[in-house]
Length: 425
Image 1 (cartoon, rainbow, N blue to C red):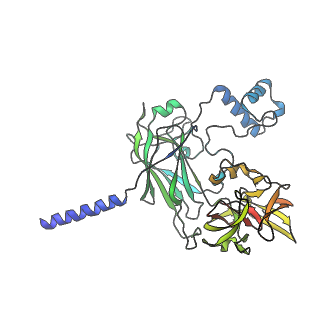
Image 2: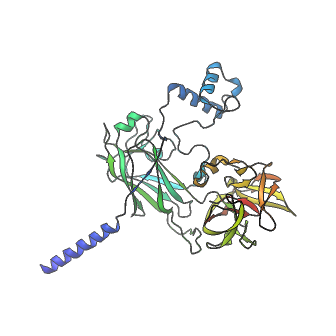
Image 3: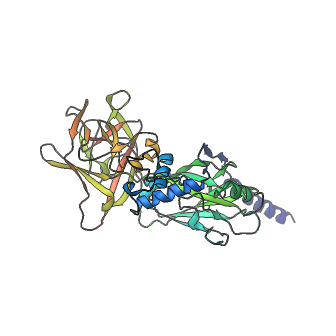
C-alpha cells in the first residue's frame, strides 16, 4: 500500500507540474473605441453599391444621374473632385494591404456551424476582412474547447499583434442573440502561450503576442530562416463565453494580424554606419550603430540596431528609385517602404505604409518622379535635398523571389540606405 501511495503521489505531482507549467497570467485585450460596425441604412447601401460600380468602371462621375449625384453629395466628402474608393465600414484593414502584402498562413477550425443560405460560418469567414460574416463553432453547447488554428510557414512574415471582432457582428440583434468569447487560451505548438480576456463589446479589440509568430531568432538577432523547420501552429481556443440571448452558438467575426518582415530594402543595399562607412544591409549585426537623423532634435545621432528583419519578396512587389550622383544609381525597396522627403514621409503605396503601427496617424504622401528626397551630406552632419530621376517597377523577366531586409533602432531615428533617408520597420 505504501508503494501505491508513493506512486499515486508521484503521479499527482507530475500532473500538477504539467498543469502549472501550462498556467499564464491572463491579459485584457485593449478595446479600440468607436470601431463597432455602424448599421447601414438602405440609402447608405445604395451609396456603397454605387462606389463598387465606380471602382469597376460600370459608372463614371460624369454620367451619374440626379439621384446618384445626391447620394455622392451627402455621403462622399471627395465629390465632385473625386470619390472615396473604400467607404465600407465593415472592413478592419481599410485601403492598402499593410502586413497582408506578404502574409502567409493557413486557417483551420475545430468545428463550424452548417451554412444557412448565403451565411457561411466556416474558417473562410474569420479572415475575410468583413465583420458582417463570422466563424461560428459547431459543437454542442457553448463551444468550450473549440478553436481556430493559424498555421504559419516557418519563413513567413511574422505576426506580432492580433485584432478581434468578437461575436456575430452582422447586426446588433445577431450580436446579442449569439454567444461571444469571454476568454481565449492561445497555444503555440500545443504549449500555452497566453490567456486573453475579451470584453463584451462590438468594438474591435487588440492585443500583442508575447513574441513574434513564427519566433525565429538567429544568433545575430536577425530573423533566422530555415527551409527545414516545420510550420508553426497558433491555436486560439474558447475557454469562457458570454451567453447569447437566444443561441448558445459562439461566434467570432474577424481575427486579423499585424506584424513585421514586409516593407524592406533589397539585399546589397548599403547602410551608412555610425563611422560614416557603408555596409551591406545583410551584413549589419544587432548591436552595431548606424548614422541616424533625429527628426525631433533635427540633428544626426548614432543609434543602435536592436533588430534586423528579413523577408522574401517577389520582384513584382519591388520598385527602384533611380538617381544620379557621379553615376547612375538605384535604391530598390518594397513599394510600401517609407522614404523621407522634403514634405515628410512618402512611399509608392502610402495607404499600405500608413497601416503600419509605427506610421499610424502620420501623413504619408505619394512617392513619384517629382519627389525631392533627403540624403545625408558628405560629412554626415546634415541632410541635403536630392531630386530623383525616375521610379520604375523592379526589372525582372520572371517574378523571382528576392531577399530583403530592414532595421529597427533603439531610437526613433531615420537611417540611410544608399545614402537616402528611409524609415524603420
